Image 1 (tube, helix red, strand yellow):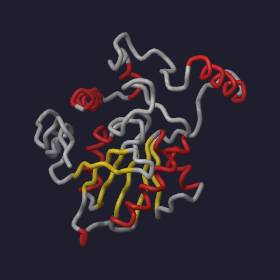
Image 2 (cartoon, rainbow, N blue to C red):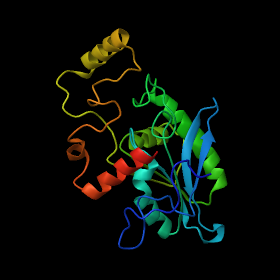
Image 3 (cartoon, rainbow, N blue to C red):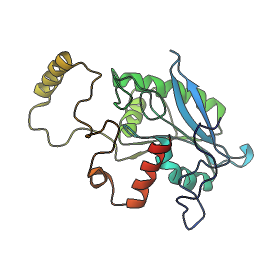
Length: 229
């Protein structure tokens, strides 16, 4: 199923090798996976011919990420012979919202995401050629590592990109910060934004690029997908 609002054909950001970073590959399939509680998670599958597949990779992005941001990377794996799948986390990107507005990402407990990953993995593994590899970036790396540690998934290999293993620069002990966050949650509600996003709701904050990347072209690719979808 193709997502609404964008075609497979676009020429906005084509690599020297011919891959268009601003178009869904013609052979890729976008659809929804329905969790046990009925929540729909957006996914993209880029299959290989079953007899020729090197194996299958499941990639999970970070907090606030969408899989479109990683199309170039998915293409690299696909060209190497892998069946490739990626999905947006519940409450993130194209998988709905659990917060108080259309912008804020929220989840009541990271365990909800681990449950989703375990259930998705079990179905995906049965439907795709092995061996099966699990990859995660940032928050996705944290959740992949947790799912493996809890033996909820058993991939033959794991690859983590900048995994979220902790918080840097804490000025106070973790226990005090936990208590403060619980108090703020009771006062303001846990589904409201933790900080001001920008002057206009949903608009990218000034200087955001400097926190994320030195690559202006790839950053503009992300803005393109945010606007289109």
